[in-house]
Image 1: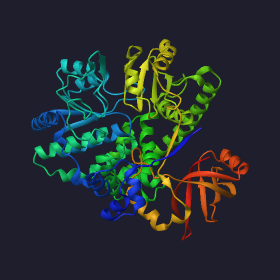
Image 2: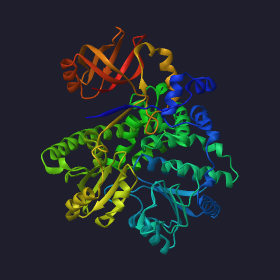
Image 3: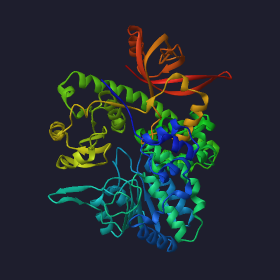
Image 4: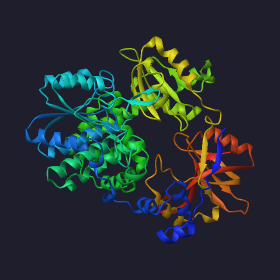
Amino acid sequence: MEKWFITMKKADFNGIAEKYHISPIIARLIRNRDVVEDGEIDLYLNGTIADLYDGMLMKDMDRAVEILAEKIREEKPIRIIGDYDIDGVNATYILQEGLSALGAEVDTDIPDRIKDGYGLNRMLIDRAIEDGIDTIVTCDNGIAAAEEITYGKDNGLTVVVTDHHEVPYIEENDGKEYLLPMADAVVDPHRADCGYPFKGLCGAAVAYKLVEALFNVMQRDPEDVDYLMENVAIATVGDVMDLVGENRIFVKQGLEMLKRTKNQGLKALIECTGIDVERLSAYHIGFVLGPCINASGRLDTAKRALELLNAKTRREAVMLAEDLKALNDSRKEMTEKGVKEAVQMIESTPLKEDKILVVYLPDCHESIAGIIAGRIKERYYRPTFVLTRAEEGVKGSGRSIESYDMFAQMCRCRALFTRFGGHKMAAGLSLEEENVERFRKTINELADLTEEDLQMKVSIDMRLPFPYITEKLIRELEVLEPFGKGNPKPLFAERNLKVISPRIFGRNRNVLKCRLEDGNGNQMDAVYFGDVGECLRMMEQKKVMSFTYYPSVNEYMGRKTLQLTIVNYQ
């Protein structure tokens, strides 16, 4: 059962509204997102590229820039080693574009999810040594590769790490001992000794900051790489970073750039997925473009997604875009099958009693374990690990809930893993097959989650009676965009609503439409896209219900009508 509550944060909403020329409703919504001080409100509403912090504030950035500037001048071969997800691919592209523009002799390598596993490993380092590489630059990985980096250094490589993941640590009696790799430079805002003001950047944003700093030091105009902000936006949304502070600016600016992108590959992907480019939003990155880019690293090689970004001709771009879309369609089918299998296992075994779900699906494709974990977490609202049989041992991915720090808890049973990494909300791991059951028991024994922690909380911004819903208000809500993690779409609610003529529509019978009427006879059209069968059953049983919703303008054949999208119902 969901627990609904209205966010009742106090402020002088009329004063804020007057000062920033917004409505008191918008002022309330901004306050609900914990944007409080004048400077914060101004940045939230009006932040631009000029408000981004100087990358040189990051620990070791000066060192990284100095090393790379010297390597470029000496024409030493540099290899960028990225990761196989949307963040890693875009970070690799950003570094490759930036270093190439500065005249570097640079190439790229991205690990194969199945053969190489996550991040830097010995095979990748050996490959670099065989190819006569002088310097490795990591992006979106490297912070947890201490042994591999020492091996590379022992073999004469210069190694620069750029990453955004948490620094691994060991619990000591007097606190934490952080395990930093012994690279020539380690640029990661999560370093305990890094004074950079904003910690929530993705790997691509850290890579962008490095390129920008390098352009400055080599006396080139950093505005020449502004166009790469569209890649930072794609990675920020795709890697589910909080859309606050600098991330909000990156995504806002990046989306505008993406609408008129000169990148042939991105243009082709936008076209082949049928997105109306003028209405392109963070939603389209998260649920349409992002999954296609990620699908290459899941089911094939992420090098295909990098090829898409590097496509020089329209013909090549269209071919690659269609390939990625087809891969993603096939990934969707595999995911549905995996989710079904996981639900069946949970429902028919003692797993159902666990606070932390550890589901072992030996035959599941390891690349979709994280997506399945996310879907199971949403269904049961419990931290979830989905494990699958790999070439060596067992691999898995975890997805968490707000009240559970997944990475911190995994650090407490690190002895069970051959490899692991991640952050509060998501993680990856490898372990021996005989340790699967032991891991399940241990992680549950360590969990101190209460029943309340495991209750899905629905945070409602405010009650919004029907007469307040106007086209003008809906247009005003656009100033809050881009929406996503950390800056959710506003959620409104109203109780005691009568449901009129509910019916299921759509080619796949996946849309429910109805009219809702309040106590004063005001009516609104409404749609619902969740489990429509269950919702229809409830509507037919109950005379009046409560709903949470988001209002929008529905345009059909030139006619505009106001419509509510139902999110939750009781």
